[in-house]
Image (cartoon, rainbow, N blue to C red; front, side):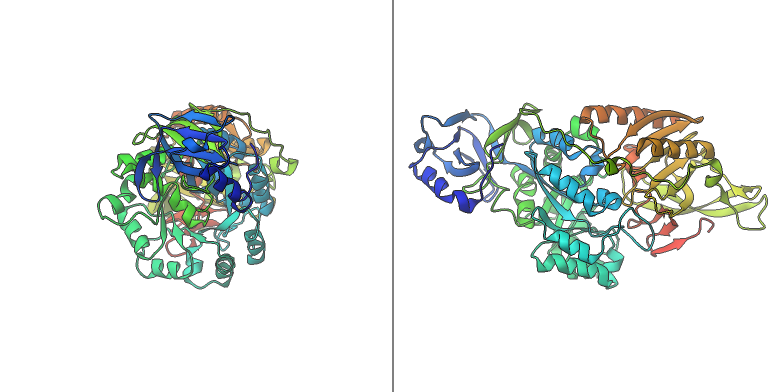
Length: 596
């Protein structure tokens, strides 16, 4: 890619091209330009010079003997799609391989919240991703993780970022704002630490992004918005969106691999009739199979259109709106003079069928394939050795003991109940027999054990509990992808298999695994911080598919079971979670015992 100067550096050149004094580098002729500023679709040429748009209109006077001409007859030209909130780590791909997967789909810029890798490696992990992004055609911006760990009262992560560290990172050039403020209880309780971080972003004129996952849409949400947090992506229905938009918040409508909320949330616009200018389409979390089989932001836009949004409105919500929110609309988000020439060529507007992708005036992908090879990143050794258990796990580690004096009676225990395709869980109670004073999993009742083991070398111990909804009939599954502290998370109905699953991931540097009878059935190795793989998306997707089949053979038939499992350890989502410190009631914000 040719380097693109700032607008101040090239403005005179663009003026000369627009006036016909100097020739354009490239002219796109005969296309229909989606004007996201006015909501129109106009037949117009686009003249490009120095990587930026010089003219939209009749470009005949900008042609020169060396001007490249692209015939866009029958095609729609839309701005490059922008993902305003994404955790690249959740794709299980390195940033380079993520770029390889999404750029041909029309995504030309992302605002990543790298709090997954930050919870493992601290700001070193954030620097690692930003440095990798500098060599890619994908424009990579970051928000500084605000909650590392997400809930320090309830869990232990591999790093801890205090307000001073967050403030320093907020000043980095490619940092666009403060990452999602997940510890919303701390915000509304006036916690000095979290308000110091929000204040640091506001003083720099950068937005503080939000994560408000609580049913209180009155006092709690209002207090949260009053703190200066200006966006949120946890809306799951139209009422959630309406409440946020009415408070002046930018509301991000999420359509990931597991949390597919757009069809409901978009009703705030299609049925309630609210203005869409502060609504933003995002993915949040996407697995490799979704990226390959369905797409990235093109899929989200397509879903919004199929749910009743006007195509131009949906495109605005994936281009201009996020650009305006992060204050980069003078650079991207629209096809207009002075903006970067990030242009997606569509064969069908409503179906969002991507034909070609241009970044900074150069074609980078066509018909779903990259046109140029991407650099092969090199990762330091400390990144590949992040699973540090105090000792190998043994079956006895997973014994859940009944209260003293209970021999063979029944005991009432708290159970985490997962809800398919939802981020929330239910806090249930069930009775279990105490066989010799020990409580066992009961696969016939769909009750499995769940354990979270501190894996960052801190000796932070293990939390145990029970979970219902996975349908496991035998064996165990484990993952080092366990939002957001990414400790070692294990679910199973056999203590020996649970130990074997955890040890298998410790040996390979992290990932996801399924075990039965002490034998590894399938494994996805994620050696980059225990979260990502340097392998191509198709290889990772194939390994994930094999693991999913192993899950099914163990009895689980959930859609995207890995994503559902990964949130069991996130103590900022309702209603009951488990961390390395134990069970967390996330409605009352307190640690609770397994025995009710």
